[in-house]
Image (cartoon, rainbow, N blue to C red):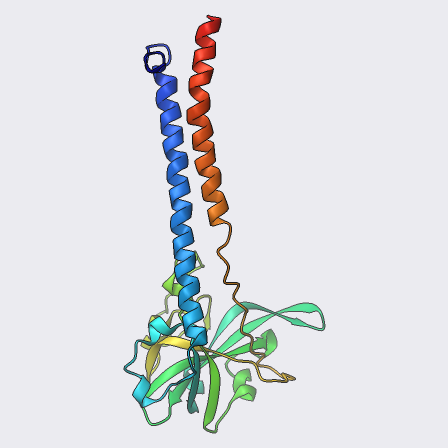
Length: 252
């Protein structure tokens, strides 16, 4: 049989079949890698969500906060509205109808420190998103915020439309497409942490900002099923091809 498969008549076809089977096996292995990544992500998130709330004060600033994404956190400080930004093209449902607006982000100077952490405070309507109109959302007093630690969107390549560079007469960008903490820190007078806090919604939210914390589905996804499919395709091809060659040789 091997002589037939690698004869001059079948050599090219055999090479293509072997190459196709190798690609299928590689795709199956890739899906298993994706499964391992998904399991590792689920384990990391579960560990952080099960951990006790972190009090983000001066003693916690030396911790590896970046590795604590999704950890519940409590922080006390004062908002810095002069360094506030908004994220465009955000949707919120009001009375069953989707409304386009902005996400409001305000740095909070941590009490007793010269360091700030960015707070995602929630959705605001488009008509109140301009800098001069956002005064209605100001919180002048010392505030205690509860939420969860998050990494910025720019930590992964999501293919977002990049934000424009500043012109020579501009000193800061107020309305953003993507949340880039490094770039935001460059236009903020107070030192800014490399993570931000997604604020938890209050029990009753009657006025903006409307906070929201999406629920994560910590499943393994379809990766195992896809891997088994690719391995099965490769097996069928490698087993079926010799029978096909043998049959064709018998006919001729």
